[in-house]
Length: 263
Image 1 (cartoon, rainbow, N blue to C red):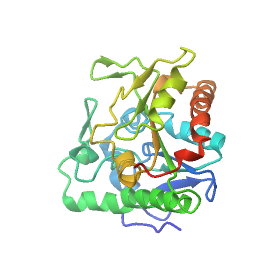
Image 2 (cartoon, helix red, strand yellow):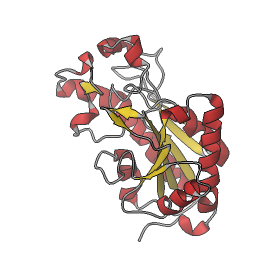
Image 3 (cartoon, rainbow, N blue to C red):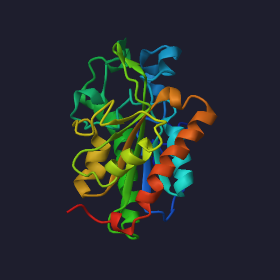
Image 4 (tube, rainbow, N blue to C red):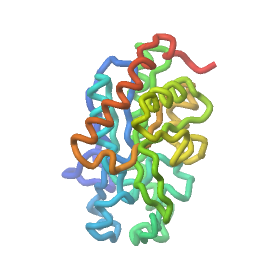
C-alpha cells in the first residue's frame, strides 16, 4: 500500500497506478505524464481550468494509449497520477525543467521561487514513489528474463513555440537500437504514418530521464515513443494507433534473444 505523504491527504489518489500487477509478459509499459491532477494543497498551482486541461499539464491521450498497449501485450503498466507541472517525472530532480514556472508561454504561479523544501515535498510524495514502482516491476520481471523491455509512452502537441511538428509519431533512442531500428521500419512499412527518428524530441537529449535511468543505465532494451496528440483525440484514433504500435512491436518482442543485457 502507498502511504499518504505530507503533500497528499488520505482522500487523494496514490502517486501512481499499477495496471495488470503480476503480469508475466516480459515488458513494462510506463507513462510519466499520464495525468493532469494537482494536489489540493497546491491550489491548482494558480492555473486556470483551461490550462490545467491542456498539453502543458499532461501528455494528452498518452495514459490511455499506454493502457491500450499494455492490454494488447498483456503486460504490466505503471502510470503517474499527477501532473508534470507538480514535478516532471521524466526529468532528474536536479534539472531546472523538473519544476517549470513557464510552460509553452504559460506562467505557472505555483512554481515561482520554489524552495528546496518545496521541491523535496513534491519529490517525496510523487516522484520517488513512482520511480520506485517502476524499479519494483522491472526487478520482478528480472526473475522471468535477464533483461525486461521498458516501453515509455508520451504524446506531443503539433504546434509548440511556433513550430509545426508534423510527424504522426516518433521513436526515441540513444545507445541501444535493438528495438528502435526495427520499430521504425515496422511503423513506416506501409507508408501510412510519418514517423520521426528521434523526432520531435531526441532520445539522446539528457532530459529523457525515465529511459536513461530505468533502461539505459541497466542495459535493458527499450522502446520510447512520442505520438502526436491529435492522433489520439478520439477513441477510434487511439485504438488504431495502439494497433499500429502493437503490430510493429509484436515481431520484435517475440524474439527470445531480445531479453538480454546490452553488451
